Length: 307
Image (tube, rainbow, N blue to C red; front, side, top):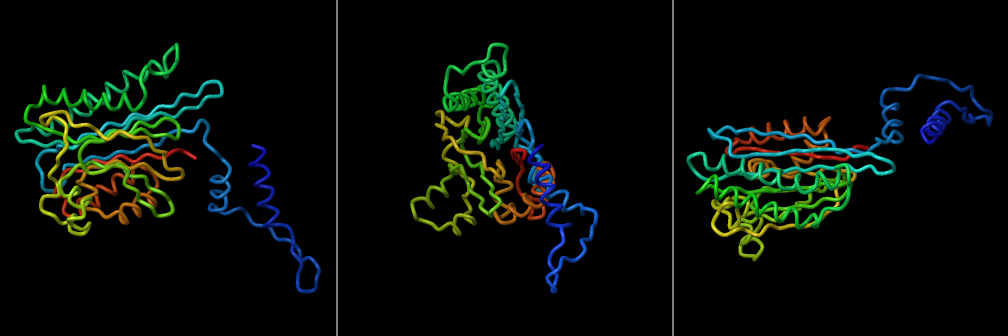
């Protein structure tokens, strides 16, 4: 509060204290009410959210050319503020199913249900229960084992089906990411960067990594959706699991290829940074994908830390 009061004083001094005129004397000061933009400037610079918390939005759409929606998502946000500890916590998952006769829908649903239940069961009691402590395993181990569990559940409940999965666990300003397939996680920074955190497990992406095709050729390759890693397909696929920092200031974006395959990074950045909220940004991203033809299902989650 003291910082806010001092900032307001400084702001008034800059506006209202007279300045020397051409004759060396001080002109009479004039006053005017603060404009809305001036009030918002003070607010953004000085009013910090306590406790800090994650603000998330999600969107999901069947697209314009599909009858069934094989994309699934899960979004869970919580905050624990006790004593001097303030811990924002979030678990966000996007899965894109594949397989005929509704097996894709069943596979992606099982993926997000199994993954979210496994991770939360491992973490909620140790972190938020009556006798808090540290989980028995590392966060990377928990997410890795959660993906393996999701794979097994799909094999049992959706034989012949498969799913991609990208899960991000946020604790404070740190993220742990588990990923299989070609759903993506991005770090979106206000300086214009759209950093892809995950690596597509597609044959075309592998050809690009080997230098056999260019990134431009990869974007239009007819087999760009063919995956060499997916849950529920034969032997368990080892997930990529890693830690990263939550973009601050910025956003975490998780989406299926129904979005990133249709809307450019620049266009996604413009929509995200111009939208008044993560939820509204997700709806506008879906609209942009559908405006580009909407040939696939679309799922998107956008997360930022409060100021």
